[in-house]
Length: 185
Image 1 (cartoon, rainbow, N blue to C red):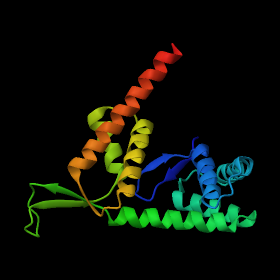
Image 2 (image 1 turned 135 degrees about the horizontal axis):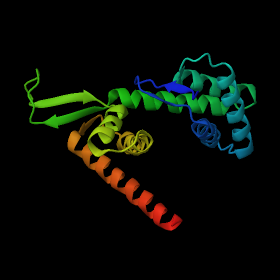
Image 3 (image 1 turned 45 degrees about the vertical axis):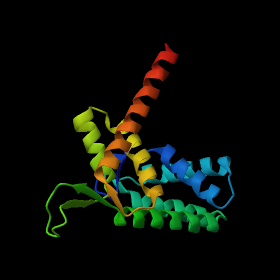
Image 4 (image 1 turned 60 degrees about the vertical axis):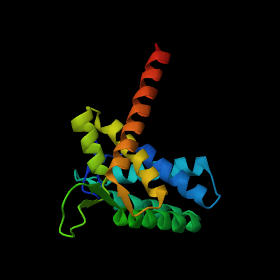
């Protein structure tokens, strides 16, 4: 039975060893200690641990994050653990601060604006429901959009900009997929 991860936004996704490997690689790169072999070994250890300890319940993404930090600290990479934690906290803070603004709606402020907090899951759901994408592709598109949104450094972002970013990344992803299929024959 596949292991599921409970994300901080309440959504669920399958545990992916490659995401853990990528997190280790990124953490080591944050402190100029890139070591692919170490990242692979650390990711194997975490994956083995979470699968061995699985009692049929979903593991929280925060638990995985803490495991990764523990492995980095225990193996002589405390600077990478610290940098990863700072990166993780910074992204969480940015996500919580971002408001999506829609014109043309009345709210209690009388400004004619509807507001809601940033939610990558909202994009995933929309891509699946209205655009027919499967979950994994929708997550990749939503992650790409989130990266762009976080890098903007803005706290109030027009919904129209989000929609344009989603459509552009969706189209780019589908075009790349089609080109891979053509190349594969």
